[in-house]
Amino acid sequence: MAVLSDQGSHCSVELCRQRDFLPFSCDQCQKVFCLDHFRYTDHACPNAKGLDNRVLVCPICSKGVKLVVGEDPNLTWERHMQEGCQAPNGGERKARCPVTR
Image (tube, rainbow, N blue to C red; front, side, top):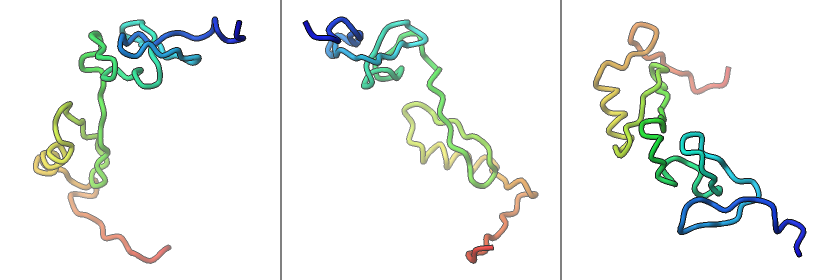
């Protein structure tokens, strides 16, 4: 009998069932997953709808721009720019000097 044969858990994804010695537990569905399936979208978690929130930080206004699931991030960025993205110093961009210091 191998030393680690009784350790770890099998991934809950039926087509995977990989034995993982450091498994992840989903905080929404309470099932155990391997490294390939621990994200909500990777195991199609039914309890995590709307919880996978990702944002881009705008380099102009420093605000978080929420990415829309299934939408091209470039379209999200364009919409943010058209809806009044302004620099914090009154809307003007400050030119950056290319010389260090």
